[in-house]
Image (cartoon, rainbow, N blue to C red; front, side):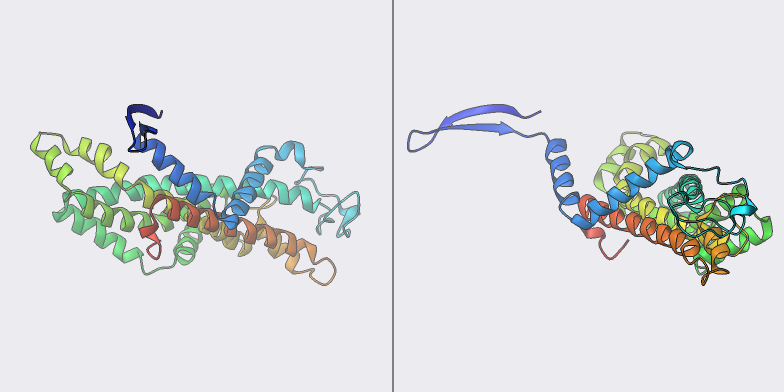
Length: 305
């Protein structure tokens, strides 16, 4: 709330009012101004809102059951009855595309939640305590860091097998290292600030310092990383499903739809094109929103995340 704190008279007799603007008020307006100033970010937001709406109301939006085959309608071209045609089993492509959004978001959000909680906790503990904890945790992370996320997820999923639960476990393990690495660096920097040293001298416990001071100050880079990682996780899930070790049939997954339609590109190219376009748009949207959050929360993060 903006409060009037003083009224003064200028040299020409004009009345000048002075107001106190709360810091949170100005920070929020700066964030909103920067975040909403780029049209590409707004476009990404629109895509994500539509994606979440589609996933939430898939039961009502899908015109057909996406799992029940109908061999009499196999590989139908796009028509008024089937807007995107049907696949080899006669299932409506649009319905499977809609339900695929639910799969993509479920895998993405659950995986990022698990990975971020574990990775951030490990990073803060290693950075704050240092010593043997830092050495053990970061050496383990350094062992996994050379592997690209999709390769590490592929290895874990290959060991565990297919299915949505195993895919979530594989993607969660594969994305723990980036969270740990980023949070570790932030904790190392933040713990040297004067207010942290003051908290220690006042007798504040380690857990309180980590949760009340280090974690909130590390929030901007972490929220940007989470947003960008969501797009990467959805892409990785699509890659695993495309390779046949992701979501098991007859589950609706965009990667599996691309793989199934790839065999019939000449007869029905929309089978692969539609889910491929959906993957591209969603990954693009998360990246653009992540860029917008980075610039709005802390422009110094450009080039680092």
